[in-house]
Image 1 (cartoon, one colour):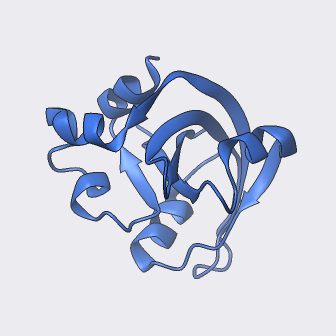
Image 2 (cartoon, rainbow, N blue to C red; image 1 turned 180 degrees about the vertical axis):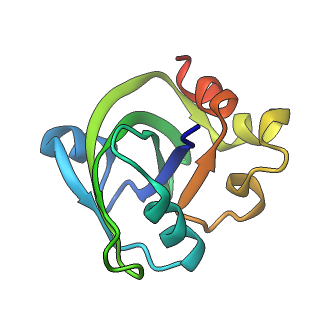
Length: 128
């Protein structure tokens, strides 16, 4: 069963609104080995949650993986497509307060930029 993922972005550098404007982009700039491993494991159709860091610290929207080229294991090329804005942004405080995230790298490894999500975590964040 495919895993869903949460992708973090600094809103002042590239916001979810930028992704919606651009439509399809290559998700790059990831260097942490665990995050790169998570990118390599993605497949077309993988569901994504976009989380804005910095001043906002909210899950704000959805996206999906269009294609993955993992031929270079240190720099996989993952194209993503913008989805919808969440009905309500989910704050980091709300995430940390939910037992679903007790063992999540989102809470335990705060600097990890590509975080796997369970189906239940995805549902909590998106309402889907």
